[in-house]
Length: 281
Image: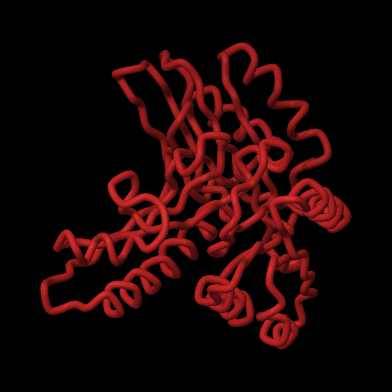
């Protein structure tokens, strides 16, 4: 049975939960999951409510809720579970995150559908084709960046993409691309930043004798690697781990953390509030 999900944020005050629940009762909606939180430091109320759509006039549901939201100062978005998000994956030479995501979709682990892969290298065309996903090779140089991104945006627009995933896409997106998909581009990287910025971060970490390594998935903003964080994880390492071991463990973390972040986004469990996220598990 299809469901709908309301994601809500509002200045905290009495009656918010009752207003949402009362509206859904009037619509004869059966709530299947509800979660809310109040941040007293800023007086912010956030809520995620999922409900069945059986017997509901869904064509007018958003219009019916809008006056209630306005009267309570709510920012909100309504999603339907039967509206499958369309996903694009951007990749470079490193295949681990790309192959992991395609395998998870192939095994039915992730909602949504991968519509295309765009890569600035041709290396992964065969493996992408194995999963029946179109592969587009768009090489890029400093001189061709604007042209390459224009072609990329044409592809994304033509496929009506809802979410863009940077699966170790080793290019910095321009503000034009970022602004076209606000809150809809997810990136993954190691969690050494800002300590070990630039190339060869695992070599730097090994030289410093780090004791933990990690990975961070976040939304992309104009500020490089500073967007709202969706998910993170770490694992311990020791002097016995070579650079090769650190890289291998880091890639394992990147795959898992990116997949979790993508699933949370596609299941409508992430709410961006200011410069951070609220994640409903």
